[in-house]
View 1 (tube, rainbow, N blue to C red):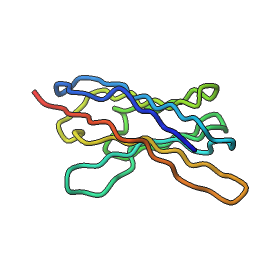
View 2 (cartoon, one colour):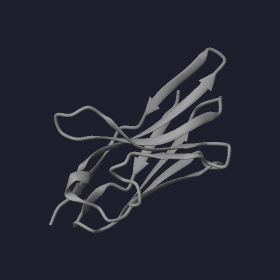
View 3 (cartoon, rainbow, N blue to C red):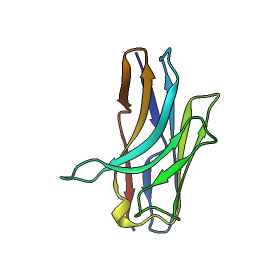
View 4 (tube, rainbow, N blue to C red):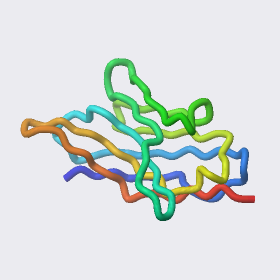
Length: 121
């Protein structure tokens, strides 16, 4: 049973910073990709950033967060981080951790419970 535990959300003023963390456990197989997605009220979940577990950590960002957010990972701890700087009100959303795991029967996505990020003065 794969378990993802998120932390770090909260309320911050515009221009402020937050750091999200997500620790993965319970899988006998290696994680391939780790990432963060977000969901605004009434909208579909969207990609924020992803990072590969290997290959030196290849990153991918949504255009809306490039230059402001930084994704990183700790391979030994199976943990992914999202450093969010220069936060804007439009970054307000529920943020979900995601891992993609390849097993002997194929690949599968797993999701965290979500953490609320609110950017407001």
